[in-house]
Length: 250
Image (cartoon, rainbow, N blue to C red; front, side, top):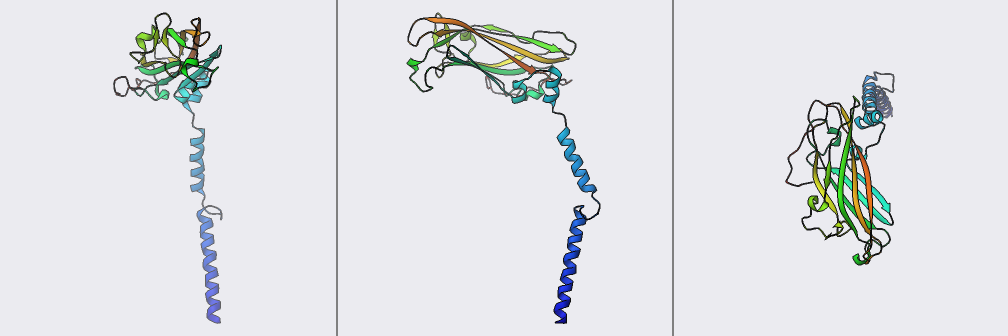
């Protein structure tokens, strides 16, 4: 009986000592808590570190989906036709947060249309056809000094620049862009060297299109679809890094 009591007391003391040691280790028993303080400080530094996009966004007072998300897509609806413009950086310069004034910065864009008056998988003959006859892209750039310069320009017949060498076409109206059988795709366009204090480039896309009034009929109406896309340019003494890619790769 005496030995049993001694064993019980010893076990209780061991448990108490272990609990005290554990409390001291984690700073809950009045011990040194410098470890937890350093960890909390490190977490605070990570949490409060400035996001380069957010900083730039506040400076420019404008939103750039292209820079933030690495892609830009807009839907412009007119007379039941949805025009979709998509722009994204190519694999040559994929990191939009590392687009600097110097060096080439590459992007690809596509443009196509959908007839919203019919179901997506309805027969193609029931869809109103849309043709693209002209593509224009102009640009303006903002700088810390306030000077505005042109960074990129394109004015072309879509048949001369689209990736598809044999797109569906009309002699009168241009390239068909009705999804799923038609789409303009222009790859690896370069924004070249810019003034060192450039902070933003805005691309202005204009598409001259012809929309069929009624599916299967000969009457078409001309429209112009326009979209503007801001791109943030970050300050750096290092040129934008261009990665090697396969010819005409995205």
